[in-house]
Image (cartoon, rainbow, N blue to C red; front, side, top):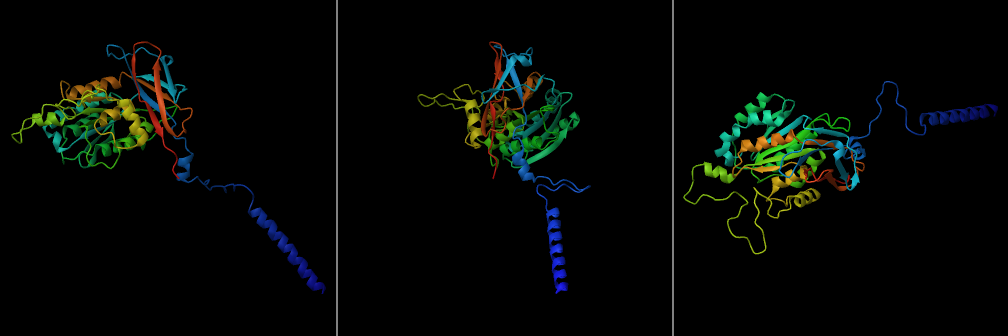
Length: 381
């Protein structure tokens, strides 16, 4: 009987000891990592939801006087920037000095073959006028396919050689897909800009007709990503009509007397005709740009490149009349190295929806051009 009691007591002691060990093995709260073992990381998909959506807004600001001349004597204190009506603190300010990273998108469809010799001469303008002494560039060609012809390099000779040897391909023009590739080249490029180090200015320079055929990407989605990646889009409009006028006639029909987008017929009563070359005839490019970004759609087609430039603070230059391709590129390069670069960390960067940016200058009779805003999409899932 006593032996049975001793066994029962021993069993109770063992059970109590086991319970204590279990409590020791399962402490409340997170486990401390063992020496030499890495700390468990948050899954990437969760990290993406926890990250601040817009850490830095970095944008070029072009200021001109009433004569159209660029103004170069302003300081940071002369600018007032608001984001959704809230005044922002300028974190970085520079005039023309920040080096640029440029992705040059060149249409290589068979339609531009008549002006290909002129296109091949533009390489030195990209390196000397657009890139500048501290810049870098990449080249992407597109028709029915999108081809990375040259990755980012500061070697001007490499860029010039690629442009000199441009070849045309099929008749397609996947313009939006090419723009998406260009934006992604910036988005995945390290290091990413920070408030302390905004890095290089990002410029997407597009030489193309204002026509897209066959793209999977939507213009509005591309512009959303471009804004969030601080990419400014400049475009040089190549004219199909100009190409046709340079080429041999293929039929006995009359040559077109106006470029695409210009009608030679009288407009309906109460309407104003508009053109791709001159959009002062009642087309609200700013309204179209904001609509395209908010809706991420392809409804804006007639003025796609003008809208893209307006949405990102750049400019579209047509080449149909007295402006050659070389002159257009030279104008863009001159502006890039004579404009202000301003950065700020948004005070409410996670607010979902469209953020309206306004840039005002404390001086009269000046025209200020900057991107109008950016869109923060709601988190997925």
